[in-house]
Amino acid sequence: MFLRNSAKILELFCTSPAESVQQAVDSNLWIGHVAPVTQLPNLIPLLAHLRLQKRSRSSNTLTLPALRRLSHYLLAHYQKGARPVRDWRTTTNVAIDLMVYAILSVDEKNQVLTTYIWYRQHWTDEFLKWDPARFDNLTQISLPVESIWVPDILINEFVDVGKSPHVPYVYVSHHGEVQNLKPIQVMTACSLDIYNFPFDVQNCSLTFTSWLHHIRDINLSLWRQPELVKFDRSVFMNQGEWELLYVLTHFQEFSVKSSDSYAEMKFYVVIRRRPLFYTVSLLLPSIFLMLMDIVGFYLPPHSGERVSFKITLLLGYSVFLIIVSDTLPATAVGTPLIGIYFVVCMALLVISLTETILIVRLVHKQDLQPHVPEWVKHLLLERATILLFPCLNRFFTFASFDPSAKPTPYVCEGPWECGAVGSTRSALAFAGQTEGSAALQEILRETTAIRQLLEKREEFRDAAREWLQVGYVLDVLLFRVYLAAVLAYSITLGTLWSVWRDA
Image 1 (cartoon, one colour):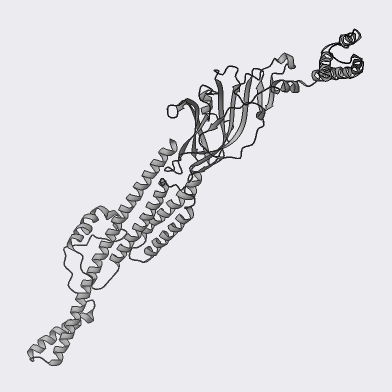
Image 2 (cartoon, one colour):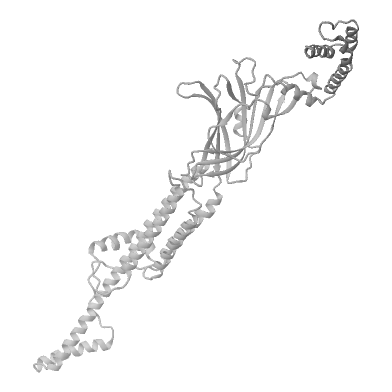
């Protein structure tokens, strides 16, 4: 009873002047509240000491800096567990914005885009308002982000947590507007189309939405105008492999299985690859090897150097493809067009080598080879020669060639051969006159066999000459077809890549 009444006296003393307490003690006003009354004079020094401490704390509070007084005023009774609205029907509008700072990496195999962005958002907190006149005209203060309510806005395409720096504070204005600015390393899933590599353009989206609150609680809007966001490259690091074309924005509402609607803001980051490095390291070496293969057709087809030259080119191109295989993007969905280009170039080299082997087989001199068929003579030595004659002057002259002519009878190459033939005829006449001699008949048979052998050899030479003519004509014809195929293929790819580059 004494302690409870003493507490009442302490409360009265702390809230009333000391003279009033002394008068109450002197006039025995405490009788019936505290027993015994004779102990009250002993409490007066203790009560005076408590009164002095209270005055000291009040004076210290008035002398604190404005920032500390305002921070204590805002956070003393703040509840960060609930949405900061006085009426629960009020919607919290969060305005967001981003600026792309850098494109760190594009992983085509895993379909992951890593970017570094400057993210900004602001909303109104109805419990963080104050009168600047009471706090030395202070209109803005930074508060710890862990001490206030923050909207649960995330990026739907997040696949991994990047190494983003932690920003521990937010800015709060006297109207209750909270600004949260922070840099974020974003690792998001993106559907990458590499068919046009290295002239590809990628369009990746960053979707910001509240993970829990529906649109009646948290609504999203754009901080700046869409035109300002679209072409903002003020902070973009423009020295990497990728260049930023523009950033598109789009707001929409979505719902899951007819439930409450959610607000989401999409940012479409459109980037384009710089192809200079890949053009120098991939396309130019391949083009040079193909040009050397075309130049190889000017080697004489009847020599074996052309075959070894083209085999060397084919092996060199194979080594080149092994080296550049790590540079090409790899996906399980499709193959880039440049990969198809390399495969076709390899196929053209194989076709060129096959054509060379065929021509060498035709023009190489062999014994006992048959004559050229008449239809081959008609197609290659008559029809094709008329079209390809300007190019055949450097190989062979067909002006005196008559495909319908028969092999020329054997003509003696020297006086000794003609003398042998004349003596044979004289021997025949002499043998006829003398009814033949066994020795002379033997000589006659041997001489006739030699003459037949020479005529057959000349016939083989004519056949080899015909196949040589066919080989030259076919070589030029196949070279023209090969060159046309290479040019058509190159023009098609060049046109496609030019269109993609300027798109």
